[in-house]
Amino acid sequence: MDEQMPIGVTLNEIIPETPSIRTFVFDREIAFRPGQFVMVWVPGVDEVPMALSSPSSITVLEVGDATAALFAMREGDRIGIRGPYGNGFTVTGRTLAIAGGVGASPLLPLVAAGQVDTFLIGGRTASELLFADRIREAATLMVATDDGTAGHHGFVTDLISRVDLADFSHICVCGPEVMMAAVLGILDREGCAERGQFSLHRYMKCGVGLCGSCCTDPHGLRVCRDGPVFSGDVLLGSEFGHYARDASGRRRRV
Image (cartoon, rainbow, N blue to C red; front, side, top):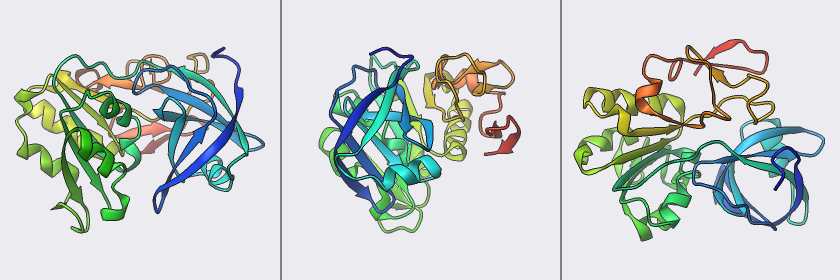
């Protein structure tokens, strides 16, 4: 695929995964590494970055104009895809995955490839635990919900104390940035921040490293090219967990 030009794809299937998350399956498979993303063009609305949950699907939480327009689409409608972009996760040994909400989406390809040994997942309530059944078939699954309707009553970060971090060569994390920052803090205190791999979400315009809209402070790393997956030790002392920039370039608290 020409990474500079979107290709048109047809939505073959739309799968409700949770009350707020849907998977959109399209009619073309994309060769990618787990953790990479594509730029999704919703005609007449916007183009936004989204992680691939399989070679032919994106799994989406409705959060803005583009995703609202996507949620209004039906099977047979068409969207544009360009990419994949970014670096993705790198795993070569035992792997711990930690996800909150829709953050399970870019981690699912690792599970599908048999590369995750233990998976910690959190959600607001039991019905919002994304891909829990599929993960349970391939890895040891530990669950936390904010309201206690499934698993541990509390946050997914509470589950980290129930595993031995020394057992894992890689710790792959995706979810709300506040949650990921809390995970990084735990890894730092345990002296293993460099084993963490964190998938960041930032506002993007081009997706190919030219516009600079997704650059992070203080190092100027581009999430679209240098990320979206960053080692934990790189994120220590950065804007991560504190603020991000909006479409105008202004800082906003995460």
